[in-house]
Length: 492
Image (spheres, helix red, strand yellow):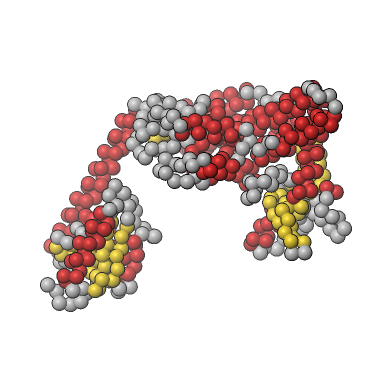
């Protein structure tokens, strides 16, 4: 037994399948250090880390190496070699640092040829086991994909453990979520609703906006099987919603204007709809007067300058929210009523645009598949084919974006058309007096979700806010509202 009081550190790594092994490993290594009479510097435990995971910056392994270099650690103690190092690279780092390695089963002297050889063999065996396990998992995943089955993974929300059978309760919750988004509802409102109803994720956690969005975008909900980023031709997954519904919601959620314009309060529905005279969108802000703050809309350039301290170039608009919101409501309702009186409808764009976009995307994907197969043939001009595959990949991305845009425009037009039809029904129905009709139309508007209001305003109006000056006030005098033409409405 060594009589020198070495500074020893414990390293323990345990897989995700058995994280409780950390405590057992620490107990055994602490007992060894106490028996040797060494000084315990600290425990370095990478909990729930698989053997194939990289141990780079941010891991306790990396912290241990840093402390060894700094001279704080002289001996590294582990349960056994294959739990301490899982690759030749790991072992090489310890050998280069010249540190002693001790395991519960015995000591390995890395300063001798025999000790280094023994440790290298154990690390190589450990690495072999990791690689063989990975290859088995890949083969099993490929076999399941060929049968149209998802590979084994934790259960996802909306489906049973088998990954193909819809969950009777969660499946309906997701269907209702798709209907909520298509009707103009926000992810924020859907998140609040699910949490208020006590609905939890597949892992039993509360929902946040990111998780709700990911659940709705999941390809599996439409019966699509994706393995390692590739869509499989066969799928046994029972879809929760039809393809058209999933694609429409996907297009809406991936619309960059929707992401950028969502108001933090959930109430300021003109965020991202108003435009400053400089051309930037206006977002939610606060207007201060006499030490009292009021909800407002401010040019994005003003917000960026206030956050970064950058110098502002030119003048930019800001306006009190309550005034401009009420003014815009009156303008958009007047536009809806005027179109209804003229007999105009918010007709949905022709589905031919979507069909053409899908056809183009399919053509490009087929050409890319053929080019990839030709690349593998003996004697193929691989330089030319590689360039062709890369070009077709870019074209595929552009075609996919075009399809998403066509679906997004169709969804927005559906919302506007439904609102236009509802106004027309009110005007044509009873009671016949204008006051009652106006009240009914206003109640219809007030009941609309935030995103639906935005779509209707974007379709009907172009709103520009000019910067305020001395005596200009905060009213609608600084707001220029222009009706959109049909072609402008479709391009929004």
